[in-house]
Amino acid sequence: MNDLRSIKRSLICIVVLLCIATLYLARDMLLPIAIATLVYLTLQPVIRVAARLGLPIPLAAGGLIFGIVITMVVGGYLLSAPVSEFIAEAPEISAALKGKLQDLTQSLARVQEATSAVEDLAEGTSETISVSVEQPSFIAFAASGLANFSSLAMVGLVLALFMLATGPTLLQKVVSLASSEQDKARVRAAALDIEAQISRYFLTITLINAGLGIVVAAGLHVIGLGNAYIWGLIAFSFNFLPFIGALVGAGLLAIYSIVEFDSLAFAFLPPAYYLFCTSLEGQFITPTVLGKNLEINTVAVCLAVILWTWLWGLPGALMAVPLLVIFKSVADHVPSLNGCSTLLGTR
Image (cartoon, rainbow, N blue to C red; front, top):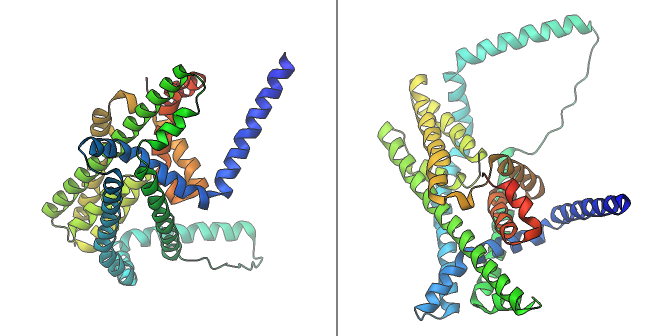
């Protein structure tokens, strides 16, 4: 009996490792499918409402996907000019930043010189030859990753369009796979519940992030920061990335503020306000609006972000929480996975 349990556990571990390897090696193929699935689950309840109102399903699906594409294009256009200007002025910004932080950098330089002197005394006078390998710049790497993600996202949106245009046919085919009528009814109820939860999650998070962007832009405008609307768009976009997004946004805003304002103390007010808004949203507003059913404990979210970032990079980090919500929703309806649902929940 113990041998059978050991074999079963070993097989489960092998299957999990094979699944992880498949996700990593086939990410360019699976990423558009994952995007299409998320879009389908989010918009399917909207398509169902449109069908009840008498709108043709293909027309409603095309309108929704077209709206998403237009929103992405407009957002990219609004950010393209400021981002290009920021990249072009990077040397000037770096020089201005060094000038503002001169006292701090001089103190750090003295500490580094003292440390180097101690290391030289400890190692003697032996000469060492250092070899540096030139790496591609972060900006080039980020631009390449963003271009690849954009192309895969477009493929995913096209696939989502076809999935949504089929209407209830796709759900009926999934339900037909069940053996008995009781199982079919259970699968249908579970599928509709999962659709409702995912749609509610995405639409709610999008509205909350939009409100966050408006509050951040308005507050930074009152403080006196230039191009406040850009930071509102950044707050909206980055807040889809748990934990890291708020820190990266605040860090970029801190660099911009130090260059923008003469007073170094006043320059830390915008990033402090940014972090205050994102913390208020993450700790109070989002949990209150989403409710207990869609709450996932912080440890699970952190592990999911780490795993999916390693597997799929930035797209994986953005999709980590939605995929975790889908898994938890499925686990709520599958008795064998109820233990996983309990581990992921906050209660």
